[in-house]
Length: 439
Image (cartoon, rainbow, N blue to C red; front, side):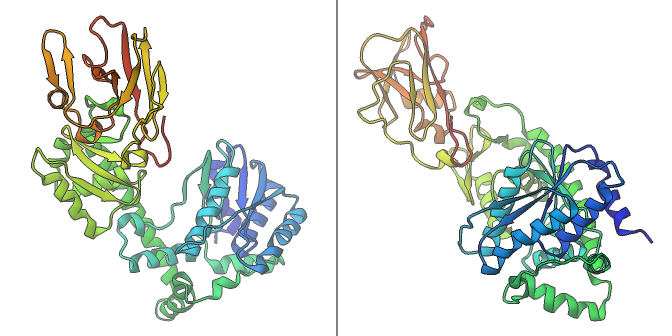
C-alpha cells in the first residue's frame, strides 16, 4: 500500500525545483496534516524552503484564536509563518467573498514561481463535483478543482486530491496533531455542508466508494475538458487573424471562421476565449450569441454578459469592458490642447511633430462634422468613417482636433490624422478592455 508520504511526494515531483513551497494553513485538519507531512519530509528530502500563510478573515470571534494555534504548530515544526489580516466584502454570498479575499491574500504573498499548497482532498473534490452537478454545470465545472493552476506570480497546487479525509484523520491521530474546527462547517443551511453531512454519508451507505468514484469522474471530465480546450485552440487559431483595427487593443476574433463551425464548436471556442475575460454565460443566455451572429450585416447587435459585452463590427467579434462600457466624458472647457492630454474614460492623446498654430481644442463626434481634404474638398465625416469601416462603437470615442470650427484631424486614421505634409500626426491610445484599467 502506498503511504501518504509517497502519494504526496509523487504529486509534488514536478515542483521540486520551485523557489519556495508555502502552505495555506487554516489550522484545520487538512492543512495541519499537509504542513506536518511536508515539514517531516523536508528533514530527509531535498525540498524547497517551506513556510506557511494563515489568512484571518475576522468573521467569527473564535477565529481570533486560530493565528496563535497556527503559530504554535509552526514553531513546533520549525516552519516560518506569516499571518495576513483581510477585510471581507459582505455581499450576497459571504462564503464566496471570504474565498475571494483569501485567495487574493495568497496571491499577494506569492513570489515569482513560488508554490502555494492547499489541503483539499478527495472528499472535497467529490463534494465540489456533486455541488456543481446540482447547479447544472457543464464539463468545465464538473471537472472539479484542478490539481494545479496559476495564482498571482506563482502557482497553486492541491497535492492531496487523491487522498481521503479518513487517511488524513488517521495520520493526524497517529502523530498526535491538534487542529481547529470551524463552527460554520456544521451549518447545514449552507449547500456544501448539507452535501457533506447529509447527502454524501447517505450515498455512502449504499455505495461505500461514492467519494472515490465521484472524484474519479471529475478526473475523467478534466481530461475531457483538456481535449475540448485543445479543440477550441485549433478553432480559435483560424479566427485570430489580424484586423485593420488591431491598434484598438481590444480582444477580437474574425467572424467568418467561427460561422463555419458547428453550433457546438462555436460555443466551445467562445467559452474558451471568454473564460479569462469575464463570467461565462449559462445555457439560456447563449441565444444572445445566435442573435449577434445572425443579425443583418448593417446592424449593430450587442450581447451583454457579466463584466462586459460582445459587439460585431468590421467582420469581427469584439469584447468590450471597463471604460468601453461607458460613454466618454465630454472634454469640457479645460480641453485646450497642446501636445499631450489624458482623456477621462478614454485613454490618452498625443500630437507627434510640430504643433499647429492657433488655439486647438479636442472634441468628440456630435453629428454633421465636415472635413476639408486636399483634392477632395469638403467631405462628411460620417461618410469618411464609413469608407474606412470604422466600428460603430469606436466612432463616438474618436478624438477630433479642431482649430476654431475647422476640423484638422481625426486620431489614428491615416490620411485624416494630420496634414499630407506629415508635419504632425494625432495619435490616440484607447482605453483597455479591462475593468478599471486604461492607458
